[in-house]
Image (tube, rainbow, N blue to C red):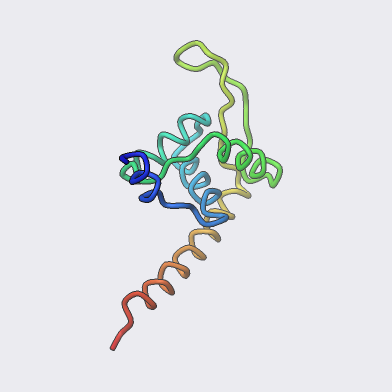
Length: 116
């Protein structure tokens, strides 16, 4: 029963929202994939969780669009990890995505709480 409740309480991300979350996370500094998922989880109060099956295709897509770049590095655990960072083009895209997100949330807020 607990697993079913957890599934019902999951918030499914709108298409494109994951890109925004990744770009915002990388705005705080370069990070490897696991670090990105942990930052999203922690900063959302553990409401949002990104599966690797969603994360890595999104990272590859963002890299193809040149919004992020990556380099192989050695982690503090002495493991080889791919570290992603935001590019100048990615910073511009983040600004655009944030603006659209703010418009969307204001529009939804207007529907949920109309002025009477």
